[in-house]
Length: 245
Image (cartoon, rainbow, N blue to C red; front, side, top):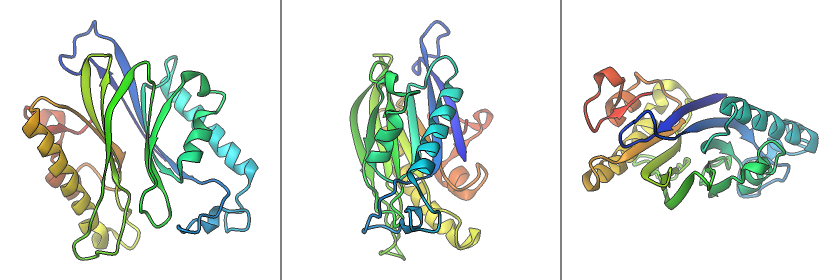
Protein backbone atom coordinates (compact mmCIF):
# COMPACT_ATOMS: atom_id res chain seq x y z
CA UNK A 1 0.00 0.00 0.00
CA UNK A 2 1.34 3.42 -0.96
CA UNK A 3 -0.15 6.56 0.54
CA UNK A 4 1.21 10.05 -0.02
CA UNK A 5 -0.28 13.24 1.31
CA UNK A 6 0.63 16.90 1.47
CA UNK A 7 -1.01 20.22 2.21
CA UNK A 8 -1.64 22.76 -0.52
CA UNK A 9 -1.20 26.18 1.07
CA UNK A 10 -1.63 29.26 -1.11
CA UNK A 11 0.58 27.82 -3.80
CA UNK A 12 1.59 31.20 -5.18
CA UNK A 13 3.07 32.70 -2.05
CA UNK A 14 2.69 30.28 0.91
CA UNK A 15 1.26 32.98 3.15
CA UNK A 16 0.37 31.66 6.60
CA UNK A 17 -3.08 33.26 6.64
CA UNK A 18 -4.16 31.65 3.38
CA UNK A 19 -6.58 28.68 3.35
CA UNK A 20 -5.12 25.21 3.09
CA UNK A 21 -6.33 21.91 1.71
CA UNK A 22 -5.02 18.37 1.78
CA UNK A 23 -3.97 16.26 -1.20
CA UNK A 24 -3.73 12.47 -0.91
CA UNK A 25 -2.40 9.85 -3.30
CA UNK A 26 -3.39 6.26 -2.59
CA UNK A 27 -2.50 3.01 -4.34
CA UNK A 28 -5.62 1.05 -3.48
CA UNK A 29 -4.09 -2.22 -4.70
CA UNK A 30 -6.38 -4.19 -7.00
CA UNK A 31 -9.74 -2.53 -6.55
CA UNK A 32 -11.63 -4.87 -8.88
CA UNK A 33 -15.34 -5.53 -9.18
CA UNK A 34 -16.66 -9.07 -9.62
CA UNK A 35 -17.27 -8.92 -13.36
CA UNK A 36 -14.97 -10.55 -15.89
CA UNK A 37 -13.90 -7.92 -18.40
CA UNK A 38 -13.20 -9.84 -21.60
CA UNK A 39 -10.79 -7.14 -22.79
CA UNK A 40 -8.43 -7.41 -19.79
CA UNK A 41 -6.68 -10.02 -17.67
CA UNK A 42 -8.81 -9.73 -14.52
CA UNK A 43 -10.00 -13.32 -14.14
CA UNK A 44 -8.38 -13.88 -10.73
CA UNK A 45 -10.66 -11.20 -9.26
CA UNK A 46 -13.90 -12.98 -10.12
CA UNK A 47 -15.98 -15.42 -8.03
CA UNK A 48 -14.41 -18.37 -9.87
CA UNK A 49 -10.91 -16.88 -9.94
CA UNK A 50 -7.81 -17.50 -7.86
CA UNK A 51 -8.77 -14.79 -5.35
CA UNK A 52 -12.29 -16.19 -4.86
CA UNK A 53 -13.52 -12.63 -5.22
CA UNK A 54 -16.96 -12.04 -3.72
CA UNK A 55 -19.37 -9.21 -3.05
CA UNK A 56 -18.49 -9.41 0.65
CA UNK A 57 -14.75 -9.13 0.00
CA UNK A 58 -15.30 -6.31 -2.48
CA UNK A 59 -17.45 -4.33 -0.04
CA UNK A 60 -14.94 -4.95 2.74
CA UNK A 61 -12.17 -3.54 0.55
CA UNK A 62 -14.25 -0.44 -0.24
CA UNK A 63 -14.87 -0.02 3.50
CA UNK A 64 -11.17 -0.20 4.35
CA UNK A 65 -10.19 2.26 1.61
CA UNK A 66 -12.84 4.75 2.73
CA UNK A 67 -11.70 4.48 6.35
CA UNK A 68 -8.09 5.07 5.33
CA UNK A 69 -8.98 8.20 3.35
CA UNK A 70 -10.95 9.63 6.25
CA UNK A 71 -8.19 8.78 8.73
CA UNK A 72 -5.57 10.56 6.62
CA UNK A 73 -7.87 13.55 6.29
CA UNK A 74 -8.41 13.98 10.02
CA UNK A 75 -11.20 16.45 10.70
CA UNK A 76 -11.15 17.62 7.09
CA UNK A 77 -11.42 15.20 4.20
CA UNK A 78 -8.87 15.76 1.41
CA UNK A 79 -9.67 18.32 -1.27
CA UNK A 80 -7.98 16.21 -3.94
CA UNK A 81 -7.30 12.47 -4.09
CA UNK A 82 -5.21 10.61 -6.66
CA UNK A 83 -5.78 6.87 -6.97
CA UNK A 84 -4.15 4.02 -8.81
CA UNK A 85 -5.07 0.36 -9.33
CA UNK A 86 -8.79 0.97 -9.84
CA UNK A 87 -10.37 -1.32 -12.41
CA UNK A 88 -12.99 1.02 -13.84
CA UNK A 89 -15.24 3.99 -13.19
CA UNK A 90 -17.83 1.82 -11.44
CA UNK A 91 -15.48 0.89 -8.59
CA UNK A 92 -14.54 4.56 -8.19
CA UNK A 93 -18.20 5.52 -7.92
CA UNK A 94 -18.84 2.71 -5.43
CA UNK A 95 -16.06 4.14 -3.29
CA UNK A 96 -17.49 7.65 -3.49
CA UNK A 97 -20.93 6.32 -2.54
CA UNK A 98 -19.55 4.88 0.70
CA UNK A 99 -21.20 6.32 3.81
CA UNK A 100 -17.94 7.93 4.98
CA UNK A 101 -17.39 9.81 1.72
CA UNK A 102 -20.76 10.38 0.09
CA UNK A 103 -21.54 13.63 1.92
CA UNK A 104 -18.35 15.23 0.61
CA UNK A 105 -19.78 15.19 -2.90
CA UNK A 106 -16.53 14.18 -4.58
CA UNK A 107 -16.39 14.17 -8.37
CA UNK A 108 -14.20 11.78 -10.36
CA UNK A 109 -12.04 11.98 -13.46
CA UNK A 110 -11.29 8.54 -14.87
CA UNK A 111 -10.76 6.68 -18.12
CA UNK A 112 -9.99 3.04 -18.86
CA UNK A 113 -6.29 2.65 -19.58
CA UNK A 114 -4.56 0.29 -22.03
CA UNK A 115 -3.04 -1.68 -19.14
CA UNK A 116 -3.35 -5.42 -19.79
CA UNK A 117 -4.84 -6.06 -16.34
CA UNK A 118 -7.20 -3.13 -16.70
CA UNK A 119 -5.96 -1.13 -13.71
CA UNK A 120 -6.17 2.64 -14.03
CA UNK A 121 -5.46 5.92 -12.30
CA UNK A 122 -8.20 8.31 -11.19
CA UNK A 123 -8.53 11.83 -9.82
CA UNK A 124 -11.12 12.72 -7.17
CA UNK A 125 -11.89 16.26 -6.10
CA UNK A 126 -14.16 18.29 -3.85
CA UNK A 127 -15.94 20.69 -6.24
CA UNK A 128 -16.30 23.23 -3.44
CA UNK A 129 -12.51 23.57 -3.25
CA UNK A 130 -11.21 22.54 -6.67
CA UNK A 131 -12.63 23.39 -10.08
CA UNK A 132 -11.11 21.47 -13.01
CA UNK A 133 -10.31 23.42 -16.16
CA UNK A 134 -9.12 20.55 -18.33
CA UNK A 135 -7.91 16.97 -18.17
CA UNK A 136 -5.95 14.88 -20.62
CA UNK A 137 -4.38 11.46 -20.73
CA UNK A 138 -0.75 11.08 -21.70
CA UNK A 139 -0.11 7.82 -23.54
CA UNK A 140 3.18 5.98 -23.15
CA UNK A 141 4.97 4.33 -26.05
CA UNK A 142 8.03 2.09 -25.69
CA UNK A 143 10.29 2.42 -28.73
CA UNK A 144 11.68 -1.11 -28.57
CA UNK A 145 8.40 -2.73 -27.49
CA UNK A 146 5.68 -1.11 -29.62
CA UNK A 147 3.06 -3.64 -28.52
CA UNK A 148 3.65 -3.09 -24.79
CA UNK A 149 1.15 -0.85 -23.03
CA UNK A 150 1.06 0.67 -19.58
CA UNK A 151 -1.09 3.07 -17.62
CA UNK A 152 -1.61 6.55 -19.06
CA UNK A 153 -0.53 9.57 -17.04
CA UNK A 154 -3.50 11.73 -16.05
CA UNK A 155 -2.92 15.51 -16.25
CA UNK A 156 -5.55 17.67 -14.57
CA UNK A 157 -5.43 21.46 -14.64
CA UNK A 158 -7.68 23.25 -12.19
CA UNK A 159 -8.19 26.10 -9.77
CA UNK A 160 -7.97 25.63 -6.00
CA UNK A 161 -9.13 28.17 -3.41
CA UNK A 162 -10.74 29.98 -6.38
CA UNK A 163 -7.37 31.64 -6.95
CA UNK A 164 -4.41 29.35 -7.67
CA UNK A 165 -4.12 27.21 -10.80
CA UNK A 166 -2.40 23.86 -10.33
CA UNK A 167 -1.37 21.12 -12.72
CA UNK A 168 -1.65 17.65 -11.18
CA UNK A 169 -0.07 14.60 -12.83
CA UNK A 170 -1.29 11.23 -11.51
CA UNK A 171 1.04 8.33 -12.30
CA UNK A 172 1.37 4.57 -12.05
CA UNK A 173 4.67 3.62 -13.64
CA UNK A 174 5.60 0.11 -14.87
CA UNK A 175 6.32 -2.38 -12.11
CA UNK A 176 9.56 -4.21 -11.39
CA UNK A 177 8.00 -7.52 -12.35
CA UNK A 178 10.56 -9.31 -14.50
CA UNK A 179 13.52 -7.84 -12.62
CA UNK A 180 14.60 -4.40 -11.47
CA UNK A 181 17.38 -3.94 -14.03
CA UNK A 182 15.33 -5.33 -16.91
CA UNK A 183 12.45 -2.93 -16.27
CA UNK A 184 14.45 0.26 -15.66
CA UNK A 185 14.15 1.38 -19.32
CA UNK A 186 10.36 1.33 -19.08
CA UNK A 187 10.27 3.62 -16.06
CA UNK A 188 12.88 5.88 -17.64
CA UNK A 189 10.67 6.14 -20.73
CA UNK A 190 7.68 7.20 -18.63
CA UNK A 191 9.83 9.69 -16.71
CA UNK A 192 11.07 11.20 -19.98
CA UNK A 193 7.51 11.51 -21.28
CA UNK A 194 6.35 13.19 -18.08
CA UNK A 195 9.35 15.53 -18.02
CA UNK A 196 8.64 16.63 -21.59
CA UNK A 197 5.11 17.63 -20.62
CA UNK A 198 6.31 19.45 -17.51
CA UNK A 199 8.92 21.34 -19.53
CA UNK A 200 6.27 22.38 -22.06
CA UNK A 201 4.23 23.84 -19.20
CA UNK A 202 7.20 25.74 -17.81
CA UNK A 203 7.82 27.25 -21.26
CA UNK A 204 4.32 28.68 -21.26
CA UNK A 205 4.11 29.49 -17.54
CA UNK A 206 7.52 29.57 -15.78
CA UNK A 207 5.84 29.84 -12.36
CA UNK A 208 3.32 27.06 -12.92
CA UNK A 209 2.24 25.15 -9.81
CA UNK A 210 2.92 21.50 -10.61
CA UNK A 211 2.03 18.51 -8.45
CA UNK A 212 3.32 15.07 -9.48
CA UNK A 213 2.13 12.05 -7.52
CA UNK A 214 1.80 8.34 -8.00
CA UNK A 215 3.26 4.91 -7.53
CA UNK A 216 6.46 5.26 -9.54
CA UNK A 217 7.81 1.81 -8.62
CA UNK A 218 11.18 3.50 -8.12
CA UNK A 219 12.96 5.29 -5.29
CA UNK A 220 13.84 9.01 -5.07
CA UNK A 221 17.50 8.26 -5.79
CA UNK A 222 16.80 6.06 -8.82
CA UNK A 223 17.66 7.31 -12.29
CA UNK A 224 14.07 7.74 -13.46
CA UNK A 225 13.17 10.06 -10.59
CA UNK A 226 16.41 11.84 -9.70
CA UNK A 227 18.13 12.22 -13.07
CA UNK A 228 15.40 12.02 -15.72
CA UNK A 229 12.45 13.58 -13.93
CA UNK A 230 14.83 15.81 -12.01
CA UNK A 231 13.04 15.70 -8.66
CA UNK A 232 15.52 16.81 -6.01
CA UNK A 233 15.49 17.31 -2.28
CA UNK A 234 14.29 20.79 -1.36
CA UNK A 235 17.78 21.76 -0.19
CA UNK A 236 19.20 20.75 -3.58
CA UNK A 237 16.55 22.42 -5.73
CA UNK A 238 16.68 25.65 -7.65
CA UNK A 239 13.87 27.96 -8.62
CA UNK A 240 11.55 26.31 -11.13
CA UNK A 241 12.86 22.81 -10.36
CA UNK A 242 10.79 19.86 -9.17
CA UNK A 243 11.07 19.21 -5.44
CA UNK A 244 10.81 15.72 -3.96
CA UNK A 245 8.49 16.02 -0.96
